[in-house]
Every structure is written in structure tokens, then in C-alpha cells.
Image 1 (cartoon, rainbow, N blue to C red):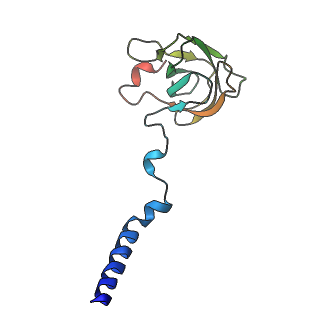
Image 2: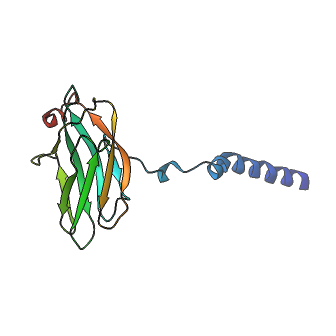
Image 3: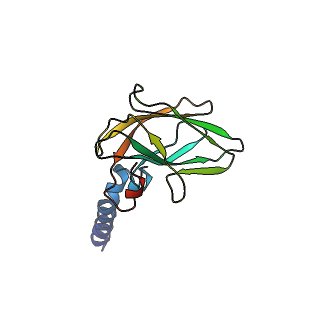
Length: 157
């Protein structure tokens, strides 16, 4: 009887470890942060958060509209400074966001910000530097899209 009991325990232990062992060494997929939309999210630029930032450009990539949502979760108003591109062609963008509010650029009824001298074709990325408050700022690749999708077509300059 004892050998059967020991064998049953050994098989049960091997079955439990065999079916759950991979989760012990693999990263949990739900803990990996990613942007679940067209644009990118910026969280380490200072007190302001930038969500779903992207540019909708003309076919030749000469100019584009910057689209994003800027969230201020703090009790003070802050200014976000955005530099798109290598710094030589476009002017910095500054946006003031009141305390505990969200500013949507390019949402329905809201105007996006025109970026002239973009010189980047749709389908590529452009470097974007985002800085707010006393934060160091963050450099991130911002996607440049075209107006082929129906909901992006009205945003093409």
C-alpha cells in the first residue's frame, strides 16, 4: 500500500509542477506595459502624462497634425514642452494643462496641433522629446500615420 501511495503523491506532484512550472520562470504578460492604440504613451516626462501621441501626416510627409491626450493628475497646473524631430525643422510646442484636467488634441471637436516642416513620411517614426514641470523629460519614438483609416482622415492637414 505504501508504494502505491508514494507513487500517487509523486505523480500528483510532478503533474502540478509540470503544468505550473512555466509560469514560475516566464514573465506574466499582463504586467508588461504597452500602448494599446496607434500612438505612444509617455509617463516619465514630469508631472504630466501623455497618452496615445501620434502624428497624422500628408502623403508627402511635409506637415502633420500632432494628436494626443495630456493628463494632469496633480493639484497644480503645468506646462508640457514637446520637441518633435531632430530639433532643426520644427518649433517646440508648449501646452498648459490645468490641475486635474485632460487636454485632448485632435479629438472630436478639438483641434490638433499643426507640425510644419515635418519631413517624415507616414509609416515611420519621429523622435519626440516630452518634458513637464521639473521632470528630466523623455525621448520616445512617435509614430507618423496617414489618413487611410476613416477616423484618421479628418486629421490630415
